[in-house]
Length: 367
Ligand SMILES: *Cc1c(COP(=O)(O)O)cnc(C)c1O
Image (cartoon, rainbow, N blue to C red; front, side):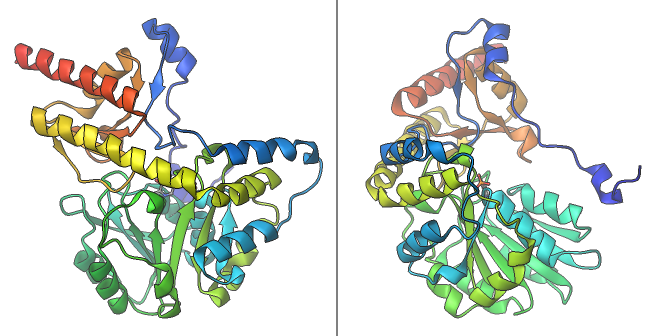
């Protein structure tokens, strides 16, 4: 059977080794996974309680319109309910965007390295991919503008960018969008929005009134701690959302994800606490880098990209794995001498830092 030609170049998502397997292989009792930017504090207790209260409703289809969540979120964001589209994770929202806008003959512009799903989904739709290398971990907005032509349907901005953690400032973003043709959709992926502390990080929602060709992606997977429930959303122009809605499956988000997300929004104290603890964790890693002369990318997310050159990311990854820590090797992320660590709780950060310090000492003696 013939599949779409463009699928041949793609590989399925490679999940990390199962924790149980790693435990057996290395004879470890405890494994800490700091690899997928999950929330080390879980989710709000309000969410857990809400889920338990809904457990008897398994047999009933969810509300395909996600009305209650939609109204709650619209109020929270100060937008119209019709400006929101929900997805089975924001991953699905970006897939919906690709299905709705991209086809052979069109192209799409993005940074590299960045979140891989933009490229992945665009390839499936047969669009031409135009990648513009980051400059010191930041989007090269001018370079991206130069790649946009009359066939460019979507341009992707990941801010904070995964895997570097760098962000696009409010001034730079505005002057970029002003120059993008109104026929090109600007998608701003803000999966880490709630973690950002930088003062010049743009508040993008108010920009939607001026730029109907703009869409913001956010998620409940990261700071809200609902990654396994799979729920994210896009915010955009109401007419545009209405046009792409037919691509969305009627029941793409479950009852449980909807009620959990609604409850999660109600507990902003939990979000504030996680944001604060995350920043303290980032500081632990920055202190480590400064005292050990390790380069890192300044991050606004809940992860940090550390550069151990001349070591390879895979080497550092293996060393940490042996000591019970799963991180992401930069080799798979376009940064071959780096590893990306998700910020954990204080004790886990301390321990992984002490393992890394020991590793550096050993490698120093060897060389
Ligand atoms: C984690 C992540 C997502 C996907 O999140 P889901 O809502 O779980 O699909 C999207 N974009 C970026 C940059 C991410 O890091």
